[in-house]
Image (tube, rainbow, N blue to C red; front, side):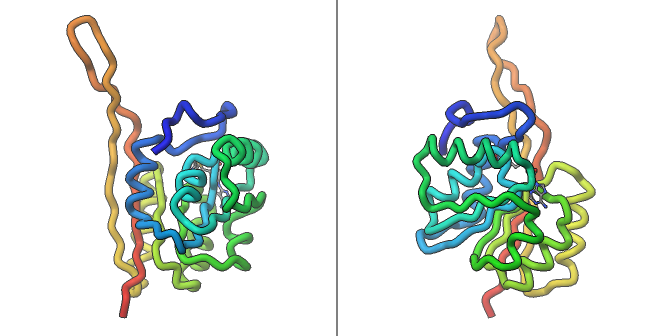
Amino acid sequence: MLRDEDFFRIEGVPITKEEIRAISIGKLQLKPTDVVVDIGCGSGGMTVEIARRCKFVYAIDYSENAIVTTRKNLELFNIKNCKLIKGKGEEVIQSLKFNKAFVGGTKNIYKILDILTHKNTESIVINTIVLENTAKILNYFENIDRYNVEVVNVVVSYGKKINNGHMMLSKNPINIITCRLIDR
Ligand SMILES: C[S@@+](CC[C@H](N)C(=O)[O-])C[C@H]1O[C@@H](n2cnc3c(N)ncnc32)[C@H](O)[C@@H]1O
């Protein structure tokens, strides 16, 4: 896993933190033949990690600053197997061919999930920080029996040196939702 400080950053453009990237990458169970969409690529933190482990990745974000940041990071890490697309995930993915999806941007999540499930996407891994979005996603999959759904809540704490040792400072919890198409 790359370190957060190795990435080019622009203020205001989020990045998925190293430890959350590590778990999310694990949940995607990437294979060298996989073609992946990264919806809401932000700084490209997940895009770069995904690209290093699969055949091809489409990175999508509607924010110009996110596109600029991801482009820089693709250059920085010499990633060639990626197409960067500026636009709304729910519109862009309609015409793309892929077998796995990572969702880091949850605006219009119902529309995104409709498309991903209709395309029988093998694995869908979603990161959410807003409780209501987690609930929306879990409720959505209640009506779809073709997918196994798992949610883990991850709180990462970083050690900070103080005069008599280390104290742990926690970041906000992240929900990682993994939806796997059931093999019938
Ligand atoms: C938390 S950031 C993702 C961070 C990214 N995974 C990384 O590692 O750098 C979420 C991003 O999703 C984008 N976003 C949210 N909903 C979107 C949508 N429906 N379509 C495209 N981009 C979206 C936002 O503009 C934002 O840049």
